[in-house]
Amino acid sequence: ADTQELQLLHFGLFLGIYLAALMGNGLIITTIACDHHLHTPMYFFLLNLSLLDLGCISTTLPKVMANSLWDTRAISYLGCAAQAFLLVFFISAEYFLLTIMAYDRYIAICKPLHYGTLMDSRACVHMAAAAWGSACFYALLHTANTFSITLCQGHALDQFFCEIPQILKLACSDAYLREFQLLVFSAFVFLGCFVFIVLSYVQIFRAVLRIPSEQGRHKAFSTCLPHLAVVSLFLSTAIFACLKPPSISSPSLNLLVAVLYSVVPPAVNPLIYSMRNQDLKDAVWKWMTEFFQKL
Image 1: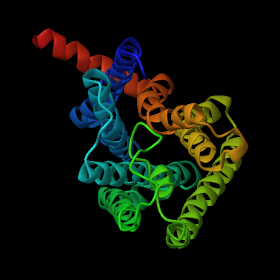
Image 2: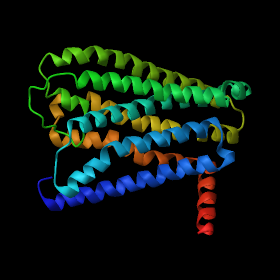
Image 3: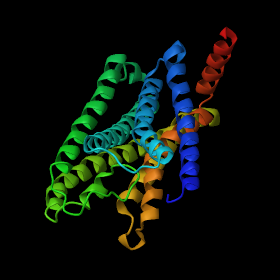
Image 4: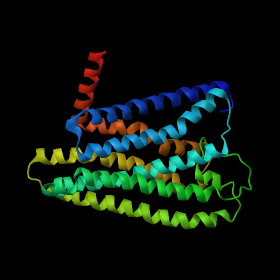
């Protein structure tokens, strides 16, 4: 923003979103960690998802709010590299974790008798560690590749955080060839995860429709709908950010799209899960009641 009034408005708006994300994800993390009834694979992965959401939104918004408050647009080179790495890491890890959560729902509904064996605590920890580790390696590749190129178009990014596509726009013309190979590899990996999620839910819906009682079908669907809603929100914003037509591209639209995929999902995910999950709502209410009674 060019005026101080708009900068303060942006600060207040982002502060409200950030506090809502901190409170929502923090409540989910604390409740799942403290309530032994929620120590199941589904809530273990949900706890990891909330941690990733907190990391994702904390990578961008504090710096944005500081810039708005102090009327500056500068970021150090190392700070930019760290921000790009962390954002790719958290978003990739969240996508991998959502894929694992689809597998968890598939086993729970399609193979319930084998659920305790296939999704024991050791398997859950290994799968979560694989999601975090793979995302770290992927983010390291992207960041090292991006920040090893030579910039020929200045140092001004048309974005409110260090977004890799915007950095590549400042690079020399041959830099895109180096990034293209990594993007092709990324496309295969993310497409594979997407196909896995779709096939899992095809099998889930087929299994649910075979349940004779309406109450059983409703209960099975209720455990899947929050995850499906989070996946849809995550993929729709990410796909639009990556595949929007160049003809409609503009600085203001790029900023809006960046907010949609980096800020909105971490803030909205806790609301999606808490609205559709009665056990989680009851546990949150119980924990909050006990907390305020102790005060």
